[in-house]
Length: 121
Image (cartoon, rainbow, N blue to C red; front, side):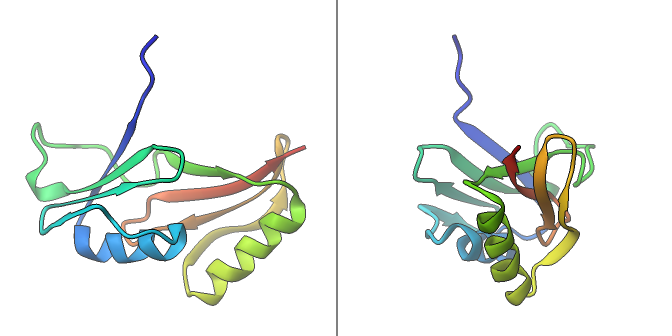
């Protein structure tokens, strides 16, 4: 079985996006260059931020067509994270709400990629 180990996001400015993700992950990137920044998260998953203008082959997808998701322990954890991110001025696309799968909110990064926090209920 093949297990994905990387998520790549195409961004306008990798350095700006890195500052955003450093703020929400609480970890520094392991590699920083003008065209690419790499984070290694606690579970080993790697997040790469690649300057859209240099992607080969050229990317034609739009931000917001997929999500990075954080599963949390309970509703209070969702509400607490929402409060922290809102206080940081992170753009919120969806305030905490009950949906058919659970309780969730959705934020946007500087390129409008979606970041969802949720608890399954």
